[in-house]
Length: 101
Image 1 (cartoon, rainbow, N blue to C red):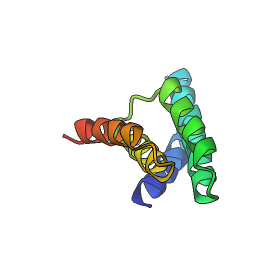
Image 2 (image 1 turned 60 degrees about the vertical axis):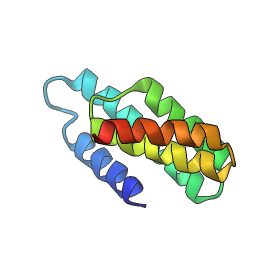
Image 3 (image 1 turned 90 degrees about the vertical axis):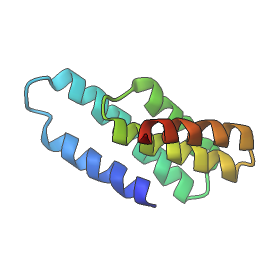
């Protein structure tokens, strides 16, 4: 749940900064956050398969914010755990752990 709140906080923060210089990078990060938020919404609704698709799309779009990326990896790990895809769950939780160090 913390990761979901953090992702929402980052999304709100990025939306407020969209008119500043470097707007294209911020748009990329905003779209990453938007994808992650949709993934979170789907997972909360019990659609873990759909949620993982959005989280993985968010990772592909990318972000320079390592805390956001860490939260996305954690959510991916949780979603794969619920899907009983334990190998993938472990892989994404390891990515999260690596970023947290």
